[in-house]
Image (cartoon, rainbow, N blue to C red; front, top):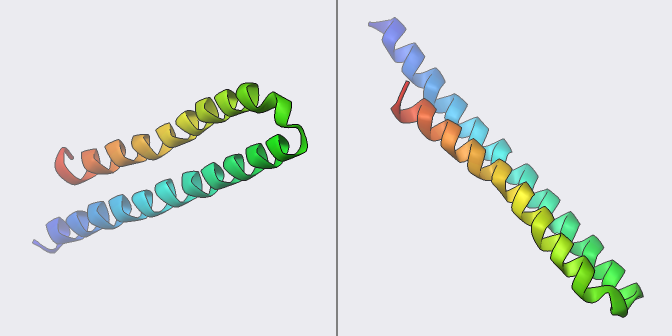
Amino acid sequence: MFYVMEVEAVRILTAGFMMAIGVSLPAFSMGLIASKTFEAIGRNPSIKDDVFTKMVVAMALVDSLAIYCLVVSLILLFAV
């Protein structure tokens, strides 16, 4: 009986840590991407459209990491 409770506790803790790390690092990266993009636009306003489009694509790729972490943690909580 104790073995079952320990496995359940490990599953919950692992899912919690995965979401904590898997969401905080992409959030930091998205802020860094946005700040560097606006810094580049501030230096050279004529490249606004090109740089802004690349920023949106980069943020979507970084955000996908957080979504993958969410999916894996939900699998850990409910499917395993």
